[in-house]
Length: 383
Ligand code: P1T
Image (tube, rainbow, N blue to C red; front, side, top):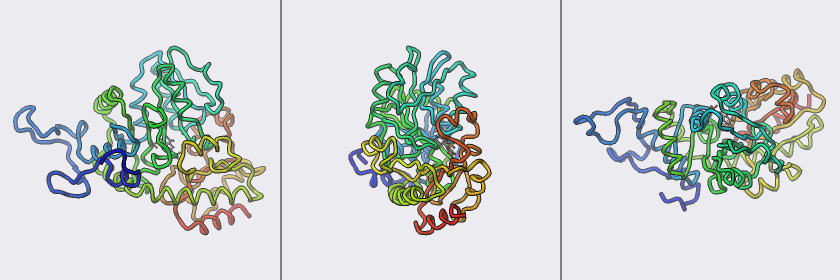
């Protein structure tokens, strides 16, 4: 399927073809570790499932197509995909990253790869003056947009331009937006990364990571590390992710509509202090979001007026429809307390600097009926 098709068509058909051996419309789950060889080295292109698996290949072609790239790779988790990219680097290399990141990404950077001689600098990329963080050793620039959990919107084209002029690889974690809402490769990124666990899988039933790129040299290295380090996605999970992707556009439209209603409701509630959602006209990144995103997403964060840890924990525990849980992007609505859950691995002083305070609640707004979601929020907040 050529890249010029609309994303709604690519979500279903991009990179897909009927299974050559049977004509099956959905790729069979090739649950095999190995493949017969007629003679040493004489085979059908499949030797061992860490290196090649048809079900995983179907998913890899799907993400490449959705992101408008030429190459995709699937991993056992989002963090495994990030791990692959960091292995492009060598001791002494520097990475400049945005200062609001998923806690697990921050932990992988600062607790694992910093031990192998990589140097990480965290900057506010919404402020245009972060060039001083770049050095001749900067080999990678890393951003999430919208960020987790503060929903900051960063200008992909502007940041990519800086990365490019410094000769650094630009990586965008596109987990919160998905390729339905924004296409980082079109805006100048070299690699797009996903926690496919979230909106792409879409049903909270699988953990996976994905990378996509158009650059052949990057792709060669990515596939080499994927095979050499071995953090691949299995065939069953590849199938589940592919099935989820087919409804991405339909789900995202509803996530975005419900997100808009939830943000408006929270803005008008007396118990709420600040609301973070890129669609609000008073959001810092609203103008950039309007430019680079199709819609504003289904993630909404907010703070409770005058609340500390206990009051906030009571509120997030008292919802009926919103489930208190880590993760996001599934059909069901989830509520989380970033400071003690998803971002607990970031030191308190660091996370509070960017707004991850004890009174912050993060909502992954699902696709249930909006009246039930608003009633659930009202019941917990009116108390
Ligand atoms: O959980 P995993 O599939 O390994 O993905 C890690 C990851 C990477 N990038 C972003 C933006 C993420 O949100 C995540 C995972 N996040 C959660 C589990 C969470 O609840 O925020």
